[in-house]
Image (cartoon, rainbow, N blue to C red; front, side):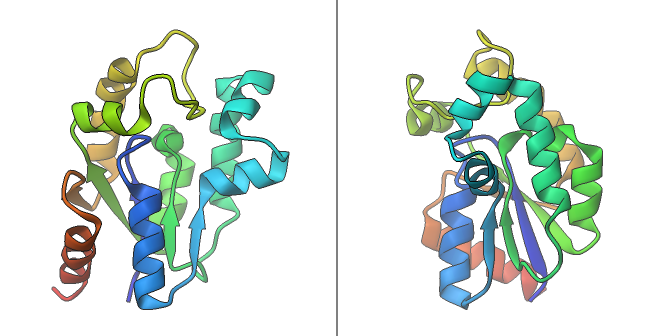
Length: 164
C-alpha cells in the first residue's frame, strides 16, 4: 500500500481516519500535531499562545520535513498547506488525500470555544480560515474524499482508491 498523507481543516477527521486506517491495516501512523505537542510539551493552543501562529506553522513544516517514507499514514495539521516545501516532501513518498468536510460539520466538531491551536491570527473566524484554505487543499490534493461520511465508509473509500 502506498503511503498516505491526509490534509484538511481542523475537525475534518484527519487524525480519526488516519489512526483508524493504521489500526485496521497494522501500519505506522504519525499525527504531526502530536509531534509538535510532544516536542514543546504543551498543547498546540499553548504553543500558539506562547510563540504565535507563525511559529506553529514553522513547527508544522519542521515536523513534516522530519518524516520519511517509513511512516505509512500521516495526519497533518490544518496549516500544512501553507508550506509548499512540506507538501512537496509529502508528495515525494505519499499520496495526498484532502478530507473535504462541510464548514457546518467542522464548526460542530471543533466547537467554537474548543482550543484547537488553529495556526491563524487571533480573531480570525473558523469560517474565514476554511474559505482561505479550501483553494490550497484543492491545489495540493491528489484525491478528495467526503469528510461527512462515517469513518468506516471513509476507510473503504481510501482502500478503493488504492485498488484502482
